[in-house]
Image (cartoon, rainbow, N blue to C red; front, top):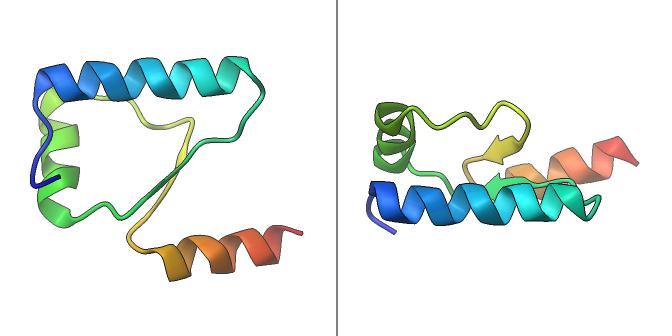
Length: 66
């Protein structure tokens, strides 16, 4: 996704909230700088979720957590 508009952002937030209600820990992987700027520009609150630039970073963090 090259950038996130408000429609996509709303869908993402609803999906994340639903996953949390089910007891899942949400991890967002593959956030490119321009997408991160879109997220910040839209004022999305991702403070309750871990974000990683790439899959290798996310897997490394997961391995260290267990």
